[in-house]
Image (tube, rainbow, N blue to C red):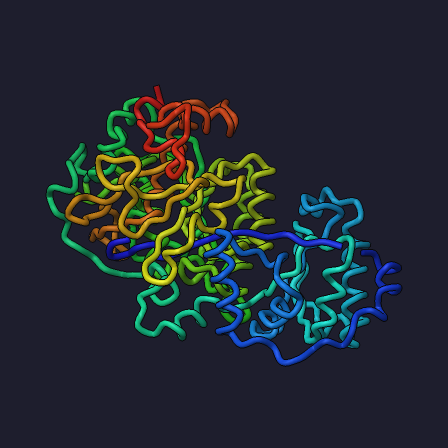
Length: 497
């Protein structure tokens, strides 16, 4: 991105195999194979090699020793998904959830030789998923052989921290993390002014958004934003959310990111989430600042992570919780997240599938990066079929990605966010009465979620699929998708007519 770029990334997951009785028969064949774990450098080298050679990395295809080594290097934390099938993620729909969970816990107790209270960290309320501490490689081997195991993954492996230590001179996603608190004087060529005195970003005009406002402004639609929170200092995303032409709507802020022993609240401590909230739904008033796409939509924001790279167990749990909370909120129709990872995270994938099963329309960033991460294709969870992957393109194009944006066959839509001179999209700053720029697939995703709100507001009785089909029909390449840019840019006026 420029200034507050989404430096992030992406891809995959799942696992399987044997009941407790079967396991007893196999115990003699499980040798005490535990040896020294691989180093972080060795683990990352295998991950990177697999991505470069196959396009993705999935822990289910990793050897037992590679998986255990990553678990060992990740504070011994393990994320386990259980279920009768790969799609048995919803605890409320899983008849044998309790017995399957008990079987898994019993096996860990048997192999680790300690009581459950010493290894069970958490058991998810809505998903067939738990976090545990495991020391022994043979425990991991035994878990992977169980019939009711969907996946076994490292719960706290810090891929980017290790990668950055190996590339000290590289400017990477792990070091920049999409954060920034800058305020910038906007170039007059990057916006037009609309009544009562709001700045319309150039990118909105490229997508015919201002003309679409005569048909829809997002009223009655609630967007859920999963990001780094919203600045408590930006009143236009707080006490002044209803001002000017923006009225009768609500903004609610939550925190699901645990910092220490408790959540540290909904306030943005990175700057990224504030900009995403701005491009989605900033008010159209007389403050002389940038307006959002759906300036009359309701907004629910979650501080789910400290930055845009979903690396730590706290961030991954925070995102999972945000997805399940928004899934269970019947007022929410759209969920947007401009964060991700190089490879899939099982618990987040479960959260996405849970939200999708509740009818939510989910937009995720296709990926933005520099340096060593630019070999990655469409990032996770944008790579999932349940999400709409969005990337940024240059002004006047639908198939020329921005300088730091990702592209690929899993992209669904594009949004013009980079000008010839490198300027990106004007948005509200972290600080009150100030503005800034933001780019990459981050802003492209948030803007596209706002477009979906305009379409749904115009057609409140529509289903998710009807809204999505209208967006596709109004885009550049419909009905034949582009191999790397999906349906391309959306003509928003056409989408709301």
